[in-house]
Each structure stands twice: as structure tokens, then as C-alpha cells.
Length: 254
Length: 38
Image (spheres, each protein chain N blue to C red):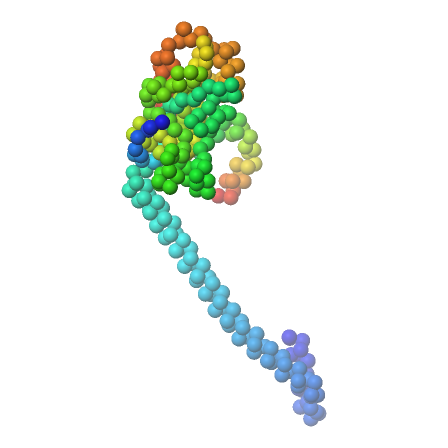
């Protein structure tokens, strides 16, 4: 631009000096350049307005997002309070039964291949908020079932075949009922297996894992004679395991 | 298994505390970089 302006000024001086006229080509190009400069100036003004508006909108959006975050947190908190929902960093401990088969430990619906189990809902597989608390999935409601007390489970023990009673740590979404829970996830912390004439009590994690992966063989090999193990001892064993876990997860111990 | 009526929902969630082995896996450079980022 500066070089062109300098050359044009030199030509103007020569026009004055000698009374010559610039060519049509110079005049045409000069007009075209002036038009482009005017358009560039106009657009630059708009661009400044657009950038200013953009910055303003971004600032407003940041303020609105902060407000939205606070409002959402407040509404979530309100819903949880209204619905009497609780939060806990520690698992909920409860008790459940399994049947013993040649393939392993079987719950109400399916086999537990490991001590960890996560619930799914076969009726509403696309709704991940398991166990469901609305009525849509019908009876029996989904979730891993567990009782608050182990003694009330004994009446449900099948007279034939082996059975196992265990202490489970429930995590994730846990729905509390009058007598028990339905949970999203469960980890078996201790288990007592009664099979044929043997009883196996396991609490150490590797032993619990073995009890699930090779139930019948482990009980036969490592179990004690059932004559030495009354059913009540299974309950006291699990109660003791729960007490140990409660102590170690009590924040006042820290 | 009859467990009665629904009382409430309990959300049980906690980030598990890192084990000693996991803590030892963190290189000093990573800690310094995080401090610089802050």
C-alpha cells in the first residue's frame, strides 16, 4: 500500500509539472482499490462489533452456567431430601442365601461365578438406574436381594441339597426395605457353605474366591464335619465378620 | 424372598483410597507437573 501511494504521489507531481494525464488503466485500478478499501473498512467495523458481541455472550454464558450449576445442585439435593435418600461412603452389610449345585453357588436367578456381582434388570435393560424404585419393572423387583438379619433366612433353606449363607457388602444404589435390601452391587465378605456332611467357613478373600469358583471341591477338601458345626455357629461366624468390618470402616477409628 | 416395603434409597459411593503400590507408581515429575499446572 505504501509503495503504491508513493508511486501515485510521484505521478501526481509529474502531472502538475508537465500537465500530463494518468492513463485510464491507472484511474480504473485506483477506483477499484478505493472501493475495496471502503468495503474492508465497513467489514472491519462489523467485525469489531461481532467480536465484542461474542465476548459479551461468552461472559453471559459463563455466568448462566455458574447459576445453572448451583440450581441443579440445589434441586438434586432437594429431591434427595424429599425422597429421604441417604448417602454413605461405607458399604451396607447384609446377608443372603445361595443354593449349592455341582456348578457352584446359585442365587435366586443365576449362578454367582465370583464373590462380586452386579445387578441388571432384564425387563428394563435400557434403564441403568438398577435396582429400579418405580413400579415399571414389576415383581419380583430387580436388584441383588439381601436380608438385614441372617436368622430369618434359615427358614428359606431348602431341605435337600447344599446351601450357603453369606455376609455381603452392598454398594452403588441400595434400596432399603423393611426387612432387607435390593442392591446394585454386592461383594461377598464372608460365607459359610453347608454341603453334604461338610461345612466350609471362608472370610479370607482368596478363600472366598475359591469357595465360589470351586464350591463343591473346596468344601469337600477344606470343610469341617457338619457334626461339629451347628447351624447357629454359621450365624455367629457371620455376625463376627460383620463386627470386624464395621470396626475397620468406622470413621471414628481413623 | 419377601423383604417388605421400600423405605428409602441409599447411595453408597466412595473413591477407593490408593494402595501403597499405586502411590509408589506416581513419578515425582508427575507431581511437579501437576503442581505447576495449578
